[in-house]
Amino acid sequence: MTPPVRLLLLVAAAFAPPTAALAQPSNIVPNARHAWAENVGWTDWRDAGGGADGVIVGPTALGGRVWGENVGWISLGDGTPENGFAYKNTVASDHGVNLDHATDRLSGYGWGENVGWVAFDTASLGPDAARFVPGKHAFSGYAWGENVGWIRLGELGQDGLGVEHHTQAIGLGKAGTGGIPPGLRGYGGTGSGELSTLVLKNAAPSAPVLLVIGLQSNPTPYVDGLLYPVPILTTVTLFTDPTGTLVLPAPGTSGPPVSVALQFIVGDPGATFGQSLSNGLLLTVGA
Image (cartoon, rainbow, N blue to C red):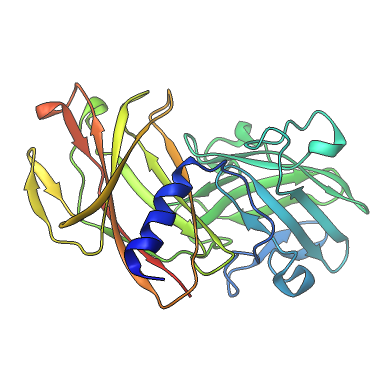
């Protein structure tokens, strides 16, 4: 498959429902897969079923199972919320852990047959609330279970449970509304059968955005900032949500690795020329 065709698959993925897609293997980093529970010891977030049933961090929800030597399996959801985006957690058949990229916070519940419910909505802890930070590709904060106590996912500002990524941020963006440049990050696998997630944050709310895709990064002056994916291979128009966030699934492909340069141009009345810019991002697609 040629690089341009594989990139067109990436563009088509921008319109796919952002679910956890449990057909893929766990995307927890092998050497950053353990979390400590105060009452039951270490838990392993990757190695369930040799990785086939381990935890997957999807675009807006988690799925898969955690293993604890002293407590057995804890399910974080089946990876397929009924509405395609987030578990309702009002019925047992649609329970699991959700991920809100506007706040980076986790919510919802895991279930262990030996320990009962584990709550991930710990917003009352403030900076120690359970969260996943795409820019660090790591978890932080604490979850809580009546029978397992506090589960430490990681420390704010430090590495915790890690999530695989094949990305490299390029340069700086250009600020607009709010005075903060929109941030573009990515995480997840990029090989055949795997799924990456692209996250745009701090953009203008409910704004039109242009995803610019190229095969290389060649910083070029543009509207008081820099445009990185030059020459441009293709573009696609999308919209941010009311929080100024956009979450895109990007399926992996087979074949040799190909580096893709990505950047968002944001329609933003608070920016010069009416456009703010995200940072650039290099995404390596392929096995």
